[in-house]
Image (tube, rainbow, N blue to C red; front, side):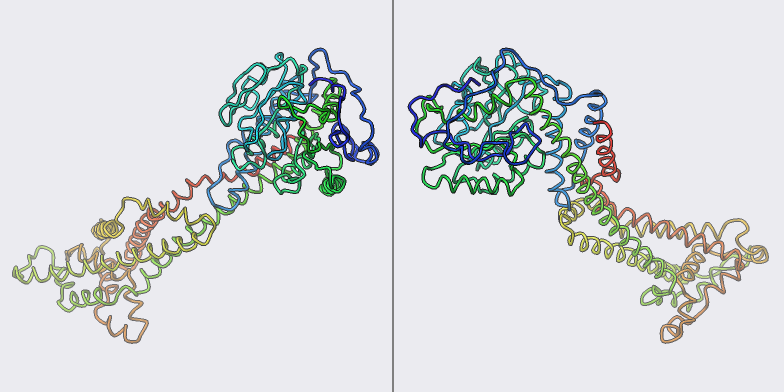
Length: 627
């Protein structure tokens, strides 16, 4: 930036206009009377009062225990970086935006200034499409360093003008590490979208850099995202908007960010027409005041065609240039600008980090709620199975008919015989008995299989219905349905029942299970006795004591009486308890496997860990202690 040149042939209509402002960007005061009054709008312009430095003026932002402060900030940065958010769930969109915002400012602005207190002061010229930002940057530098044009958006790549002595710093990865960059001498030619162009020029004093950013309201979303990134990394904003766009919502989104962070800032209203100028300036000024931006230095640039070499030929930008010379010309002034913005950003973390933590909590709460749906559904399925296994409700239809066939054919008595005596039954009779026992065995397996499969399907349907009612739940359901697991539940259940039946048979055959008086004289078919015990475990006595038509259907020999005669009451309770617990364990294992697709979908949804929010709150506290 050079000193303002002497004004030459300039009509009053093209004269620069600094409308009523509060204190300059380096002041902490916001009271009236510290800036030019409205009556001075058309008065004589003052010249620069602060000479530009002849060498690099160093400044620093933080003071004190910088290493400790850096460590706390780096811990916060890592915690924020490691955060994940589940797509579509409550808090995801807001959380990702806050994460990106906090992370960018920590990485691109705060940490570089803690590590290198002497880095150049960065002034970002940002604002609306067609506001003349590039023309203003060229005029402030005093030579053309960036291109302008009528095509919108003009600035596809950000251009940073700095003294050759400072270009190495901006070339380093410490400055916005994620952004590729290219170095050019003098006029920066447009680069690829998203590439920072470094224009080194002796016209810029050491220790200060001017950044021409893409439009904040560009139709190209990447452009206003880059603009936001550079504003996050800047010490001072020069925000330029036009008389036709100053009321746009996008403009005020950025201005309110500057307000909330107490960023050092100047506001420029460009392309102000001669007619209605006073009304426009008053209205814009009132909007700034109403939005808490009364402290910002304010300037106006009239609508003018006095542009040559892609910069103003008249003294249109002189007031802005001398203002920047005032606030950036000396080390003390630079330090005040940098310190104010730095402290404002650190102060903003008091609310931004806890707000990020609240979005994390929303995700965690949603994750817990979704997990509870799965827990409840499959717990209810187990309860339903437990109830049905003991209340006799399975002893109907085919299973009851097969049991009655076995009892009517005397197969229970025939399965027992005195020790040492061979059976004299014919093969056909033995085959018929085997058929009836086999049919009962199949009926038992069919009934148990149907019970477990039905309960599991109902649990899955319940989870699906409940999840789909939650924002983002549809995607989780689809993930679960896309990975159903490799197990055929019906086939696996039949296998488990077969193993369970064999285990019961082994329990009945164990030493000491049968009463000594029985074991001494009688041998029996343990597989048949295992089936009898299963009928008893399924609540046969419940159906007999319940009365009504079902009691009549289930009339016949009592399996429990037969079993007590063989094993005795105490041994029967022990065998029955072991068998019942074994079946429950097997069913629990099957249900646990059936819920795996839902658990996997939930665990893979990038929901933050339970302690993530607490860590963010703790980091906020640690930052307050360390600063």
